[in-house]
Length: 159
Image (cartoon, rainbow, N blue to C red; front, side, top):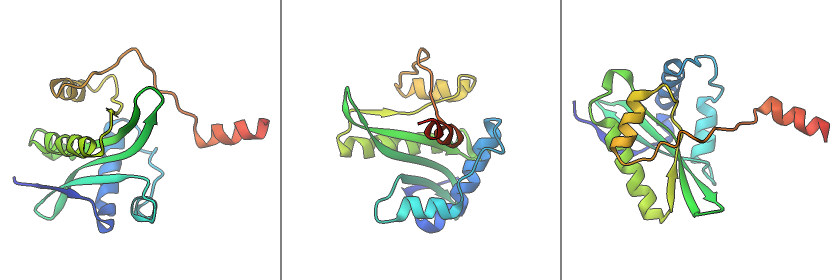
């Protein structure tokens, strides 16, 4: 199957959300997706977009996405965060993941960032092998830290 990598459009967001939900099922978190199509449309295509998204399209269907946004490192300066690189299960191994990662890396290079960051689950060995094959350093000695919306509210209530 041939596919095209392109910038996402607002009208792609329903299919993007479908892939996000597919990833949540794969990551054993099927009920954790709270974002809506409207959120994606508003947050990605407003006056100050919160993210940029590339899609892999084949036969008028989006088969993969790479969603990224800018960050800043106190050690390095401008960096890019790859929130998710998702390829539909039926298309894994087709080259879509590589093509999307290539596009992200070209985009980051053109921005002049010093680093690209992302996370991968420690049990997702195929993804880890893929990233390491591409030259990424999977840092197994770092832990991801998050404060949920409820945690934020509880924290504020104690101030």
